[in-house]
Amino acid sequence: MNRFLSAAKHFVGLFLVVLCVSAEQAQANIPALIPSPPKLAAKSYVLLDADSGEVLASKAPHEEMHPASLTKMMTAYIAESELAAGNIKRDDKVLISKKAWSMGGSTMFLVVGSRVPVSKLMEGIIIVSGNDASVAMAEYIAGSESGFVQIMNATAKKLGMKNTHFENAAGWPARNHYSTAYDLAILARHIVHDYPKYYGIYSDKYFQYGVDNKTGKPLARQPNRNTLLWTNPYVDGLKTGHIAATGYHLAVTAKRDGRRLIAVLLGAHSEKQRAEEGQNLLTYGFRFFENVNVKKGGIALEHVRVWKGDKNELSIGLAKDLIVSVPRGTGKNLKATMEVDKNLVAPIEKGQALGSVKVTLNDKVVTEVPLLAQQTIEKGSFFKRLWDSILMFLSSLFA
Image 1: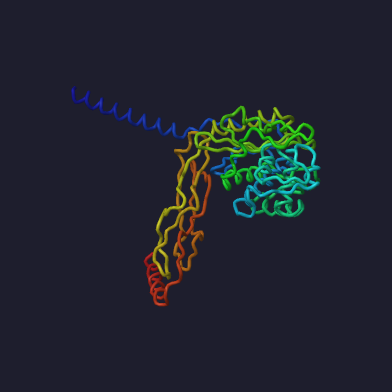
Image 2: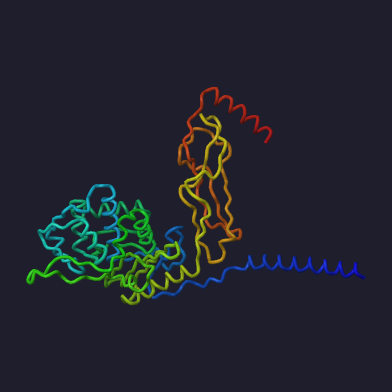
């Protein structure tokens, strides 16, 4: 009887273990409860993870529209690149032309014939969307606004903005002046990552410049038109725009718990609406997605055999961290596999693609990035190449 009870207890214990394991496996296979993206009152939008570069939500992301003052993101980006390259300096004094002074719309109230530091023009472009500041900067960098537009379009092409064309530096109405929510999100990501030294300007809430010609008193402070800077503590940029033909635009970015999201929406009906819908997009992205750093970049992930070279072994890795954005709660199910080209033969250049890392989630490919050579390997001597040829032949026979 005792032996029977003992066996029964043992069987029940095994059954409970199996039941728990099955429950855990079933739980792991339950898809995350992620709602559909919010339905926004905008003609098009993109929600982009700034770290992984993945689009988390979108509507008509490649629809071409006039970007209005979001154009100034490109004007500022080029100015930042010129500052970083040392071609211009923050304290350079820019002569204000009649064309720049005469610009209508939003301005920083420049005076024709005055000389204004580059640093102040940068603030005028980014904080108060100064049309006058944009033209003045364009003329200073390229000699003319038309010359600057050529730089704008070349830069857009370099950044991969495939559906963008600029006609001016300020976003003034023009027939052949267009971009898309996706392209502008790409530009915003480069602004954040490429020149962080200058990025702090995008979070400044006020800008004041110039004096009243009659009273001599300083002009009133102008507020940044990105109202989310006041209502969302995680928001630190980027730009707003409006034009009658296409409506109210917003490019906004926020950083929370180490993650940065970028939202671009085009064609809202009012300033209030673009702010509300921008907030809705950011909330959706932070609430329902997570990032996983799958593989570190810049380190050796594997050492592989190289034939006929001056060295026998080569380290391979990724150019940068492999970060993947996935629905909340699914990151633990990610799998990464490395595939390396077989029979690598010198010469091999540093940075040459020699394979890939494939990331899957529940057997579906999420992303695939190239594995790169981390050193250069030159051809070996004649005898080294001959000997390796023999070894390769023998190894092929055994394989």
